Length: 111
Length: 111
Image: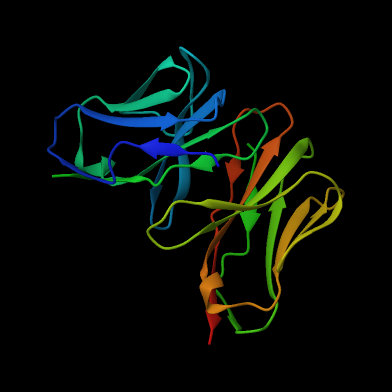
């Protein structure tokens, strides 16, 4: 079975902090994705990566950056956390044009 | 702009009935189609993949794809209360690396 592991299930941070969310997959997938999900807004793609050190902006990249130094690990960085970044963050991975497999999610609260 | 539309719901069906979930997409080049189930507070879970026209059955689930009409549907036979969840349709256009998700249909199966 595919395993996508997100480092934290729940996280509380303060405004202005730099926040790191980590995601690791064990299936040698080329593609990795970061989404946020808010009530009534569905899944929104923040960034994705199709290879080590490669990244592409999704629909809502503002206020975020990403890092992919190793194939199995994809990090989402909130440069200076703000309250409007309180959300559920979901990481996913896949082979090209194959279904994505999701981690359990990180519920992030910014106070 | 690629779009994936789902009937917004919420949809309620009695236990034992057939639940029908529909999805239309705008990009004629779409090649891969997926249905995910998401329980409240949990991450999306892949339940069906379909790539060619026609029906694909897996237990109580049947996915139907009609590329000419640009729709994909999910039928759940003998619906159970445990099927109560939000169902997400996701589409991959032939050359895209990412999926486009619909906003989801909330299904409630009444005992």
